[in-house]
Length: 152
Image (cartoon, rainbow, N blue to C red; front, side, top):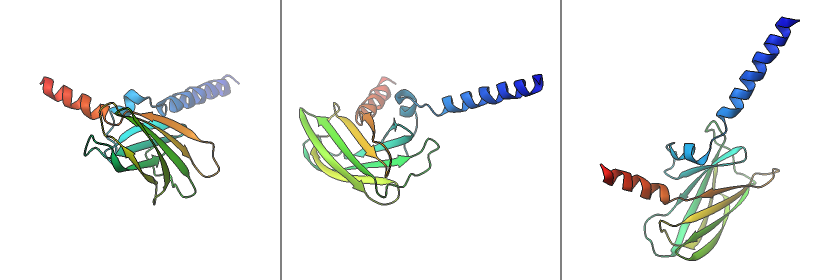
């Protein structure tokens, strides 16, 4: 009987430890190399990678791409999914409809400025699932890395 309790306790501790490994906060995700050069954020059970056009600070029609993976980095198919990106930058706001674009991508085009103050809110709804959201600061990370590089 004591052996069964011990094994149950060990299983519980291992299960609790395994779930905490999957809880990635923004600070942790910012230390990870995003596979497509974007910024990573959690949205429910998904990792979303936002890739925006960084070429010019002027507002122009530019692509927005979101890659969807699970916590292990495995691609999550986006067929049947929907999404939206709300981008705030340079005192402007753009709403971009995101549609499936192969494998694990959603893509759209919107008129936005690529400035360091850019913020984005991505809403993602996988087929048959409730919507999930994530907040991004896609150019802030690049700016901070540049500032750290200049300190050396």
